[in-house]
Image 1 (cartoon, rainbow, N blue to C red):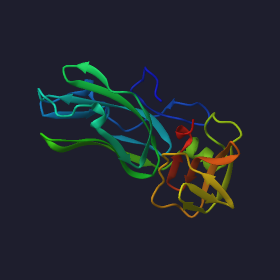
Image 2: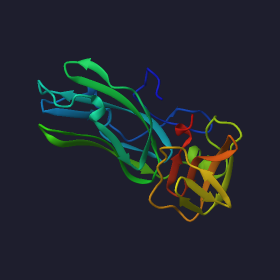
Image 3: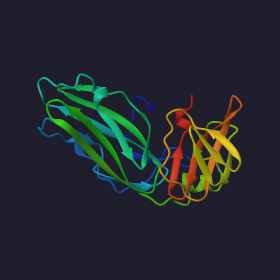
Length: 228
């Protein structure tokens, strides 16, 4: 889960130094400018363009303008995306005047065009959404994807991590790779298609090998944040 204080800068985790700042093509919004519509969504970026495997924090604000909002809980707002993973998020913070804010930590998981989305369905306005465009670029040579593909686990935890490189098969809640059957943590989401060869990092949890990270051409899919 994200800490209480978040620096609103998109960052990258690398095998050398975690949360190392990288340059991205993105325009930060000035003070989350809000308009006087029924329910305004704003992100802390206009767009994001960064290499696969990059991790960063994105701020989201919701400005409610109806005097009697039919959305009784902020949990009714849905946050999801394409080509990315949501690793954690803060609780909604009430800033007063119908303005709410939260921060979402995202990992760029699939090369190509991705997005982070906030949406709602209410009885007054129906369905509304706001999309943050995210371009997931090819990996950099000194970043997390390249290290993982070469066989080096790019994160500090947990210990005792191993990997296997082979074709992958998916069955129920497991991955079969190189003759091994690896459990998937609860809540794990997989891409719709896999490259011919992938590398999967795993660790034993109570004697059961559990997948931690899956990398392949155009893929960097994390599972370790779902464990524990």
